[in-house]
Image 1 (tube, helix red, strand yellow):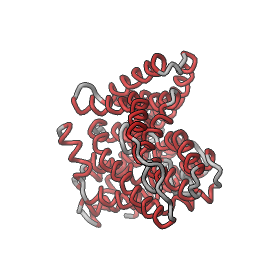
Image 2 (image 1 turned 180 degrees about the vertical axis):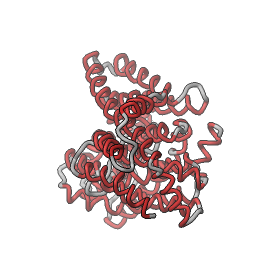
Image 3 (image 1 turned 135 degrees about the vertical axis):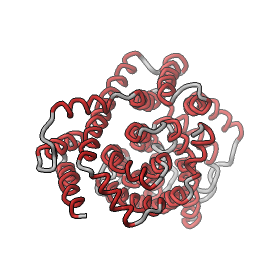
Image 4 (image 1 turned 135 degrees about the horizontal axis):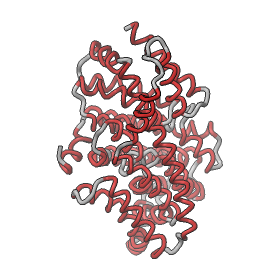
Length: 434
C-alpha cells in the first residue's frame, strides 16, 4: 500500500499540481512522464520510447472519427439546424404545462444526435432555449437549470466525442459504445422532464399553446433534413453498412451538400472557416490522446494500474462494488478536471482493474462518461456553468445554484445504469453482436 501511495503521489500528484497551475493537460501529462522517467522509479529518459509511443498512440483508424464528428457539429450549427430542431420540439411538447421547459429538454435530446459535445449544446442551442424561456416569463433559475442539465445529454446519445476517445484508449467498438449510450441518454431526458413537471406544478405555470397538427407537420418538414443526419449515422452502424468513422465522414458530406444546395447558406468561405476551426480542435484532442498513450505506458511500467487493481480487489472483488468505488473517484475527479482530460488520464489506469474484476468495458465506458458529465455542472471547473454565464444574463453564482436540483435525476439514471448493466449492454450486443 505504501508503494502505491508513493508512486501515486509522484505520478498523479505531479500531474494534478501542474493542472491546478493552469498547465494545459497535454503538456502536463507529457511533463509528468519526463519527470517520472528521470526519477528513481523510472528507467531514465528514453527519447525513443517517447517518440514511438506518441506515434503509436495516434496510429488508429478509429481516431479518424474525431475530426469528422467535430466538423459535423460545427457545420450543423453553421447552416442553421438549431432553430429548426427547437421549433420541432416546440411543436411536439410545447402545449404541456411548462411547455418550453420540456421543449428545452427534447430539443437537447434531438440535438445531441448531431453535436456530440455538451459545450456545443450549451453554447449553440442553449442560447436559443434560455432566451425563449425568459421571453415567456420563466424564472431565471428554472431556465438556467433546465438549459444546463439538458446539455449533458449530448455526449451520451451518439454521436459522442468522449465516447470516441474512450473507445480508442480502451480498444473497444465505437459502434457498440454509441448504441450503449442511447437508453441512458433518453432516460436522463425523461427523468429531467419528470422533475420539470414537479417544478411547474408547484410554481403554478399554466398550459401554453394547444397542440396543432398543422404546426407540427410544418416544423417536421423544416427539420426533416437535420433529422436524417443521426438516422444516417445510427442506421448505417446498426445495419453494418459502414463503421462509426465512415458514418461521420458520410454525415459531413451530407451536411455540406445540405448547406450548399438545399438551405443555400453555406459558402466555400464558410466551409473553409469551419475546416480551419475543426482542424485546430482535432489537433488539440489528438495531441492529448497521443500523450495519454505515453502516460499509460509509463503508468504500466510503474505497475500503477496493477497496484491499484490489487488494492481495490483486496477491498472487494464484486464488480458492482468496484464500479461504485471507481464512480466515487470519478465524481471527485470530475469536479476539477475536464471530461476529455479525465478520460485520457484514467482509462489506461482503469482497464487492468476492469479486466481483473470482469467488468464489461462497454458498460463501464458509458457509466464513466455519464459520471464525468456531472463535473461539467459542478464547480470549480464546470465548463457548462461558464458557458451559460457567457451566453445568458446570469452570474456564475446564479447558474451554480440553478443547476443543483437537477443533479438528482442525473444521479438516479447513473444509479440505474450501474445496477442494471443491460441498459447499456443489451442494445450494444443485440443490435451489433458481441
